[in-house]
Image 1: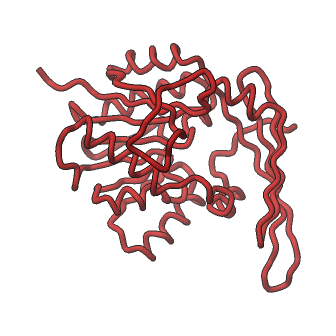
Image 2 (image 1 turned 135 degrees about the vertical axis):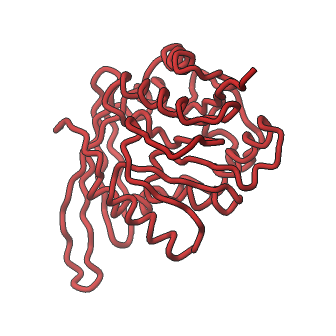
Length: 265
């Protein structure tokens, strides 16, 4: 399999929403909202929320519906183009910025930052994960929250390892092939997209890498960035009941980390 990471996701962006219909963005947004209200213990309407690696804006849209002032950041112009199309339709007051989250540069501090759906696993190495933690900490309001999730070693070794997944929708067929190298899953996505007008198919490919890390290593990086680790949850469990969070187990596939920048004394 060809190795490599193409962060613009030029081909993947076109099919991303079709292939992620099972993500349940409204429920994930409600879970974020529950945690924010529970740990900030205040009315969160109007709080400034940064959605890192926002992709096509699906989560940003749901969080804006919950009355957060959302700024979405992504490195992929192709993804952001689709996010802007959603914003044009919904007319929600979301601001989108094309930035590399490792080089995050905000105009002020954020009340809440989120980075969901294992986006941090896509970074090239753990040093880049540490860079993001440092940037989030820099632009976090004292007392502000940082919620992020990451795929686990269990998921990479037991669920994704050497697996092939096939997706067949009305206008695209996708073959998703995984190869595990160490703790990194290299993914080759081959798309066969149908042109509705001509009924002809075109072929394209995307290559993606995700690396999983030991939990203690992530916890240490959180501390080194000057953030407090408040809780760890199973990110995908009980989504139909966003307030019913479960602890991490040995078979947790994605962990939700809840952290906070210390308040000023």
